Length: 484
Image (cartoon, rainbow, N blue to C red; front, side, top):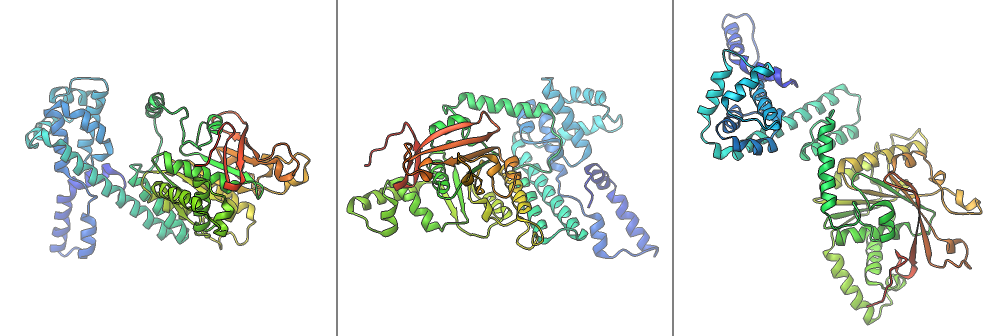
């Protein structure tokens, strides 16, 4: 399989002669080529010369087609080198707002050093003559994009076959590589390479324009907790947000708060991977949160008529929300990544919790290594997943027993359990602390502190929250609640 498109285009032009050589040599008895090998030698990567010529012809016939073509196609969508050179010339002229017609294109081809005295002029005229009508340029573009997609898939398949033949990777590694390549193709992101800063600046400008026009006060996804949103600018795409605390502080409740708010108000799908609690337990927590019914009543089933009415209303609201739950306790990052790629309009991923996850290579791969290395690899894989999916990933984590031995039991970054790599990979690290958990006589009864220990988007600090234990939920301090 040839990967250089120029060699492929040249080989395509030479194929008639090559076919003649094969047949002539076979007739003279010099050598024999099996039918399967002959077909392999003559095989071409998917492309459509006619569609490429029709697109270029449309641009030359009617310059009004140029913006639409440039918006839809890139240089490497053209398989034949000569067509690609003509497109690059037109693209450059369009960037400088120059007049585009056969005469000006030929002149700029000369300046760019891609002009052939014998063929270029005649080929441009041929492009215009063979193009049925510029009105169908959208259909021609569709054909080219489909052929490009087929080439990307063929290239990915070839790369995977080469990996398998090398024999240096496990089946799990090959499967993960395959999922990444196919997902990249589906997202329109073929193999990543060096990108000019000018392209990045355009994306940044578009993002700034979008933020300026937005009515939201924060750039990221809202957590539903106003003070926290202001402090961390919401949950931003491609960020790994680590939420850590000692057992009993309300990590899962906090995560469900964020999940519920995103599922109800963001317009996007929120996914919750629970490696600790069953889906039924999670649903009960969400109902208690939404209906403001005491969680103990839900657990015991001791519900009054008013409670049933609240549960019915809450269930209807939850049913309309875009929340997906997976309670498989043996998931790896690769498994989660694969599941999330198949979710339409994904907006948020929440994982409860990191220390229960399997390594990317399964149980056997790290049998001889310590757990710290496993957690390091998992945290790195989570950050990569957040970037690939381009959504915020909230991962819960346990803390070591360090706070228990200190007078001030507020968590610190050094308390992150089993791996300092978690601290490095996370964009935001949040700790939950409730003083009344340790001191029954505390004046700060049912008050929680959300400690922002790391924040790549701003300052660190502390946000106070209201803890509502009967509903297993958090709220902003300034928020008042009245039961309905």
